[in-house]
Image 1 (tube, rainbow, N blue to C red):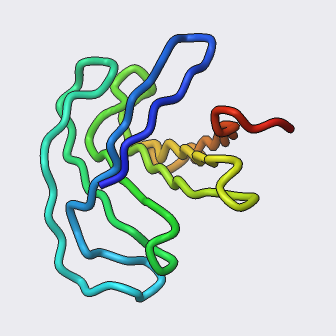
Image 2 (cartoon, rainbow, N blue to C red; image 1 turned 60 degrees about the horizontal axis):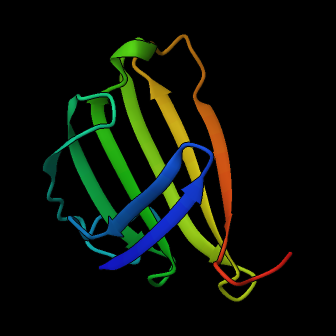
Length: 117
C-alpha cells in the first residue's frame, strides 16, 4: 500500500494504491485475478482491479463498467515515479465500450512537495 496526497486546481486528492491482483501484463506476476467494487467520482459502481508491474515500480489499475456519461467503457491508470522520485506520473486512458471509437489518453505530472522544476 502506498498513500499520497496531490493538489490541483480542483482541490486536494488523496489516494491509496493497493493491489487486488497479481495480474501482470509484462509477465512479472501470475495469472490470478481478484477485484472489488468501488464508487467513482461520478457515483457509478464499477469493478476495480489493481496490480504492480515492472518489478513493483508501476502501479496499474482498471475500473470496468463505468463511464456512462461518455457512452460507457473502462478506465485504465498507470502510475509511476520519474527523475528519482521528483515526479509522479499518472497516465489515464478511457477505453470506450463502442469499439468504433478510439481510446482517450491524458497524462498528469505531479511535482513532489518541496521539489523545484
